[in-house]
Amino acid sequence: MRTGFLCVVGLALALMLPATASAQFGHPLRGQWSGGWGKTQENRLLLDLDWDGKQVSGLVNPGQNQLTITKTDIDFSNPEAWKVKMTAEGKDAAGKPVNVTIDGTLENIGVYYKVFRGTWTQGTQKAPFLVTRN
Image 1 (cartoon, rainbow, N blue to C red):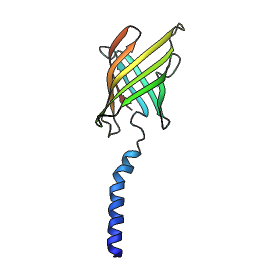
Image 2 (cartoon, one colour; image 1 turned 90 degrees about the vertical axis):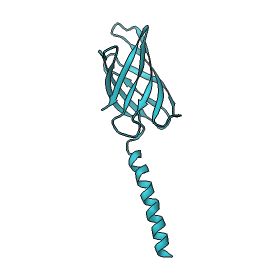
Image 3 (cartoon, rainbow, N blue to C red; image 1 turned 120 degrees about the vertical axis):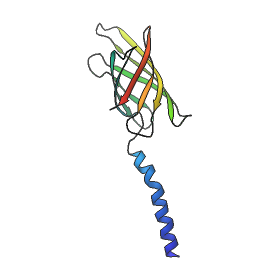
Image 4 (cartoon, rainbow, N blue to C red; image 1 turned 180 degrees about the vertical axis):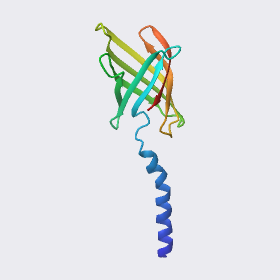
């Protein structure tokens, strides 16, 4: 009887290991992402994203002309590629308001080096974007 109990405990622990290992990465959007937006990715991007247990927040291009992520919506219906929509606000070098909408797909969710791509809308400009997690 004791041997049977130990087998069940051992099996339970073995099944929990993959869940524990994947949980070590934290939220899939958390971290620093780099890439660009525009037809040829000519506009460099750095996203510094965090997760507080309820909401993804962060900065776009941290520094003098940074934008602050104000809202993030995530569609989890496809476990392999989440639909993500973020809005960000800030000011340009002249002090004028800048509003950005980041509408894309988060791919490779189960691995560390994820890809986030889609459409970047800034003012009247709309172009593709692509960032990868550093």
